[in-house]
Length: 325
Image 1: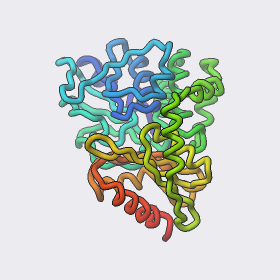
Image 2 (image 1 turned 60 degrees about the vertical axis):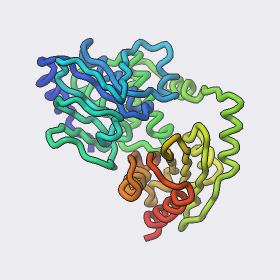
Image 3 (image 1 turned 90 degrees about the horizontal axis):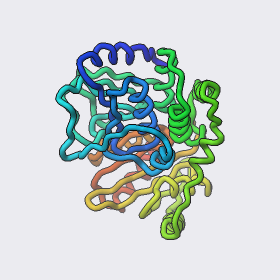
């Protein structure tokens, strides 16, 4: 059920009088964390800033032409003002997903994930809601404060919701109502947002890389599910969606980086309704292999150190444990 977002207002009122508040996004910089962070900071005050180490590709594209304030943080030397009164961390399931050491100030977390690989400090105010995106929580808070969204805020909130729900395939109760409310208040049509999101123009080398990744995928039957695994050099999310479009119920795409492996996974609504929860899957993977993992039932990720052959074997074994009871 939706939570009482007035707790966020109380926290802001209690700490904002002591100095500025920083809104912190998670290190993957997806549309939900970036959109939620920027909208929240702009709604709090001019002194509030959104901070993070990265803005992802989709978020960058949706921010083009928008007026926003984002402070890039050096993960090795994070710098904050001495007068900082507190931080609000959005769309982030655990401290390790921030990507840098947090300042020693009061912390509030606004998030919708049900799986996490490590815990927040004991005094943290954790607002964890049963929503399909953090942006919906920010919208509920704005409504509780009687705040009208600007066109820019509405576009970012809609982009975040549409992106995190996989074009509404993984939306939860109340999502469509919130989208309708944001659209009605702002005049922004969600269809226009979707068209802009889908306007990505891949270059030739990216298209070749994606095609190769799909071609070398391995398909296995696990119970009544078709599971696809492959290695990609770029655009893991697009590769995963292509595998789902080709008939897989769940797709796991890993990318070898300099000193670790990054794994991205996507699942269909049928799969999530019948036992697959990718967020918990990645949390279990982190518990077994180390690294960081978590996410949603239909979209999640893990980063850590593992041999590729071993990783593929563990993925299949863990999927079998989840769906074959």
